[in-house]
Length: 210
Image (cartoon, rainbow, N blue to C red; front, side):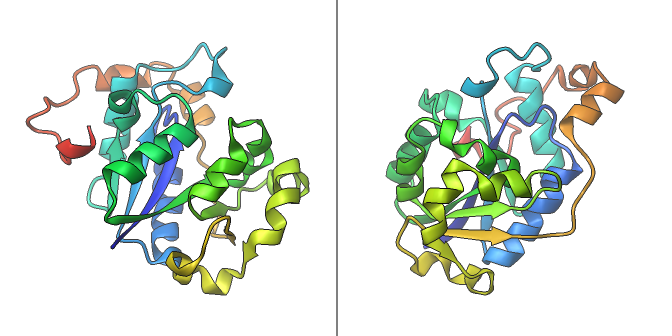
């Protein structure tokens, strides 16, 4: 079985912080690969006015993932899934030879209880939560963690996640990276114009994950 970590997000744009924490998670969890699921649209960010087109966000993610065991994919648009629970179930059906673990930052754990069918997500596959400065307190004190706490596994056992029956949660802590997509957009509001002409499908890596 191939060990895959799934990290979903807007990647608006992808930046070195995404890459750094992903590679740290690959090492900590003994992953073969991590997949960046570049979302067509986040249901919890429907009012966002600075969301770049999916093609530009996906192109930025693919560039940031180069020369690393990371695949950036817009497969959610292909699957037609809007919510994480539907995406995870579809991926498990499509790739039965893979073991999946869901990767999320502490900022997402803090609001996890607002996600559709969040308990069902936890029952689909193990979850690895990556600490993020400024959010850890809210995440650990939030409604989702109140339920998930009983399923917490020792960080020292992180590489054994394929042996866990979900729900199962492990907390990971790495050296923080101050880079944020918000700061990147503030410094370069038109960043997406550099990705206005993404490579043709024939030249893109990993076409199975389009």
